[in-house]
Length: 65
Image 1 (tube, helix red, strand yellow):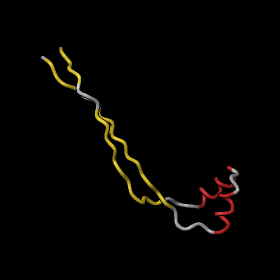
Image 2: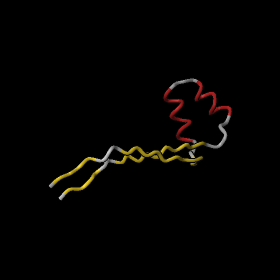
Image 3: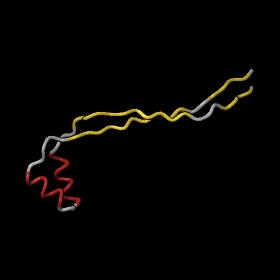
Image 4: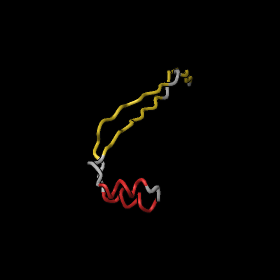
């Protein structure tokens, strides 16, 4: 008895946006200080903009038992 088996990798890539940032949030983000950027991330909420599914399939291999 034999079967064919293939590995399929499915990846979802998501793009998420926030609402418009305030001038203060923009200044904190542009400072490139990780603590300031963390403060901004704690204040905002990300909404799904869109997503895309990518699929990669390997060539089947023969499995014999």
